Image (cartoon, rainbow, N blue to C red; front, side, top):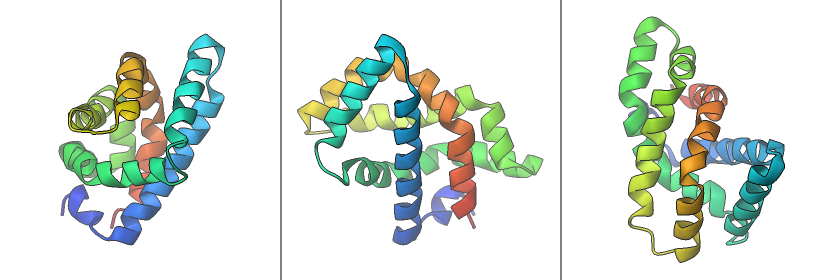
Length: 144
């Protein structure tokens, strides 16, 4: 069974989304310098859309993100540790995740979200790579 099939339950997806939102909050809070200030400002604008916007957006992206990660998760499972595998291949994992967000941003009707994403997209890959070990652990804790 692929990763995308393992997260079909709405409650499971909601829990993953909530945990991922906390991970993002933690990562953004830890950013420093001018780039960190820009990231914090942009993130607060997105969070200002609504209290549940970030977890909701993650929940909406999760099925496609898991489909994109399915091949890597399977490769990792075959080695015996998908969390370690995704972490060791964080560059490829980040590219898979960002391919989903890149595709989704092309169809959004929210100008604020689209403009903010496009401003930060070039710099965000390193942040996604840095989050891969924690993200993989979150997914693993809910995968059957």
